[in-house]
Amino acid sequence: MVNKSIIIIGAGIAGLSTGCYGRMNGYNTRIFEMHNIPGGLCTSWQRKWYTIDGCLHWLVGSGPESSFYKIWKELGAVQKPQIIDHEEFMRFESADGKTFILYTGIDRLEKHMLEIAPEDKDIIKEFIKGIRACTRFELPVDKAPELYGFIDGLKFLIKMLPFMLSVRKWNLISTQDFAARFKNPLLCEAFPVIWLPEFPISFLLMTLAWMHKKVAGYPVGSSLEFSRNIEQRYRDLGGEIHYNSRVTKILVENDRAVGVKLEDGSVHKADYIISAADGYTTIFNMLDGRYADETIKGYYDNLPIFPPLIHVALGVNRSFEEIPHTVTGINFPLDQPITIAGKEWRRIGVHFYNFDPTLAPAGKSVVKVMFFSDYAYWKSLRDDLNRYNAEKEHIADQVVAVLDRRFPGLASKVEMHDVATPVTFHRYTGNWQGTFEGWMITPKTHSLRMSKTLPGLDNFYMAGQWVEPGGGLPPAAFSGRNVVQILCKRDKKPFLTTIP
Ligand SMILES: Cc1cc2nc3c(=O)[nH]c(=O)nc-3n(C[C@H](O)[C@H](O)[C@H](O)COP(=O)(O)OP(=O)(O)OC[C@H]3O[C@@H](n4cnc5c(N)ncnc54)[C@H](O)[C@@H]3O)c2cc1C
Image 1: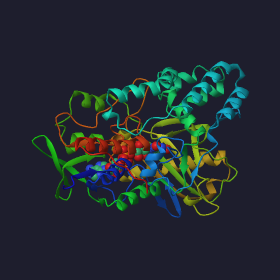
Image 2 (image 1 turned 180 degrees about the vertical axis):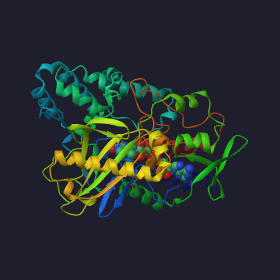
Image 3 (image 1 turned 120 degrees about the vertical axis):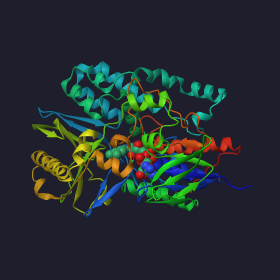
Image 4 (image 1 turned 60 degrees about the horizontal axis):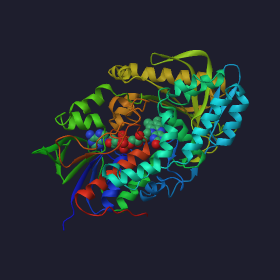
């Protein structure tokens, strides 16, 4: 029997995963990627002798106790890198000199929070209980949810019910609303900046539970290396990948996807077309919106996305070995507010990559600060390259100045600076509005499930963060695996996996 063929658009983690599982199951696969490297958002780049990491803070599934670990092993992603499990998620400093440390160990965190805020004993105990409940939860990953039958659904429900009951209430509370329950001003102020204030607090509980279990660590060696490991796995499985190959159209005959057209005009045909590229471009440009029904249009009209980032990296001739290692850095108040791209900031978070020796020569470090920003602001600024570049320089100068006040002497040691804007993220990955993780999860959208197909279009599937609300690397990899499982079912063959 002749193997069926798949064209995959995009070599981000979802596209590479689709390719790997496609090959494991005997499909002839070709990936077309517009950039000249793999990884999409999971990337890093070189400036002088520094490697700037543009993605990985933590990898869910980095340790054997996670159900996701198996997927990363199948993809050859976790065999090589050393994994670091940080003891601290972040440090939050207040204007009056107090520090809240969000420890990743549950007992230590509980003790610390009770010391800081004995007046909040009840809510702290409840919060800690919530994290402990999450440690008992592992998402089943063997079968694509789309293939669940009645029995699978029942088994899932029985397995997950205790967890769902204990965590359900946390899904409905945003981090900001949860913070307002503390009487203690330090905790009240700290929680909304741990990550986005709109995020359901359940995601913080889950993340801390994963970190406590040491299954959400940092893979040493940069995000691009992580992506390259999966690219290598794909090539070892015999997959084809074409870089500098932007897909402009998905070709359709009688409501069946039959191929793609590239920017250079060439046409490529296959039995299945899977887009692991940006959702908006896929649906509204490559397919001209012909298969977008009201539900899909509604997503793109109404759903919140993760706000895009201004990503400021500095190369500093200093080791910062005295600074504690954290997952997301130190957040501190500014003595004078600064205005970044039209928005005022009264505090900033700074991330020291002093734990990854592969990113800078000995004695030097990469230091990073990120700000949420507005795509439209940068898009219009980009029309005037001089103004755009001047704004980036101004931001770098401001960041260096505020860091120098908090970490005296830093400014004189800065050897490199690099500012990526929402337009940069859009240019390099095609992601709509320059977002860094697709659809944002809120208490209103946490249970939203999106289809991997479009109504009325056959032989076409989508994988990646635009069909997995909340985004992130595990859902990207999982969705690629799931799409291939769906194809195997359709082609009446068993779904096979191997571990290299
Ligand atoms: C600063 C930052 C920090 C992050 N931190 C974490 C973290 O700690 N943990 C975590 O799990 N996740 C993190 N993420 C999120 C994570 O990187 C993404 O959710 C994930 O990589 C998305 O993968 P994807 O394959 O779905 O999409 P993408 O990475 O966007 O891949 C899409 C690919 O399609 C290509 N493409 C687009 N259009 C075309 C076209 N027309 N033709 C051909 N190719 C095309 C793009 O070039 C790209 O390679 C972070 C992201 C950022 C930016």
